[in-house]
Image (tube, rainbow, N blue to C red; front, side, top):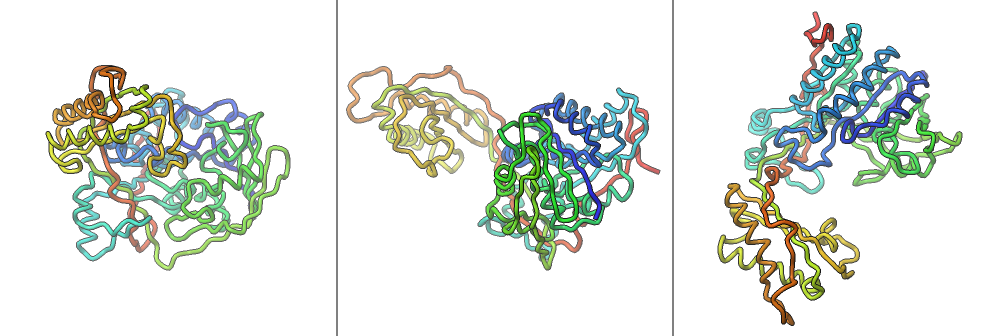
Length: 462
């Protein structure tokens, strides 16, 4: 079987800029491919629903520039998945434009570029559902019905390796893919090289977050994967990092509901019998994965929809009695909101995030009984209308000053405002779709454009 080397410089392109030095060290190892994921649903539903990128375009351009120049210098393909954070059509077009601009600035020789689109119109989902297709809920969600689709502003399909393989077979030097499984962008060239689905997707699972699979922790540093037969060798490029059995094995379980399974359209990688072996101070060998194919191919759909306008206020609490009784204070404040604006959860919603106690994990916090000496309360209100949200947020915050609590004898010191203003947040969105839909082929929901980048422009290939 062939030996394939893949260089990965970052786990989320341009979320913060990548570290160039370790990437250039990796380029000296003569990789066969340079691959990076550029998206995630970790940022919440707003970027997808609003079709906005959360990574600054200056950072996107910087990371793409570093990778593109080296890939063209080495003469190896460069693959980017989930373009511009969410993998919408806008994101793919944005990255294509940036690639063309960089090529013009650096006077790069003409090269082939493939753009893969994965956005799926909500109208198409409605059509399929009306024709009898099930949109099957994941992680305990019910199947999507017409009401769910009506609440959905935008949706993307999550591709496996097949659309990227098609781009590589057509001779693409650069692949800009829409929403894709993190591991699929790594699996595609390995499958094209004749390696098994098991090792191909497994290698992608291990490499998807770059230096997160190494120790000590350092973000945005490069790693090099060498895949031979059913073996994956992963090496840290930063001089101060190393890949160990512990770091690689723990990352294989990262972000999984089942730590031994990595699902993609068409099946899953079973990692329950994998073995991890240190082969040199900076490299770990991983092997033992198997692939379990589905009888019917199902493609994941992610969708988000607008909920309303958001307003925020920040209140600090230092008084120990109020901290001890903060839940009662919040309940009292909510009661006053209900008196004036009607039931919470109807035309508006309000959230009191108690930073210093359980704002991060809420009811899952393992130690809620710990008593902080101060709390930061972030009051968040979502309503259909911005003016209404502002009024509700002002009352929701200021009523914390007037909460009628037992044992209160004074009239001051209960709470303090960081600033006596209501902050305007981005509109609020919700996840509406975390579902799968059956398809006849893995290519069915994706569109492929073949371009030539020449003279600062991306033109349709002849």
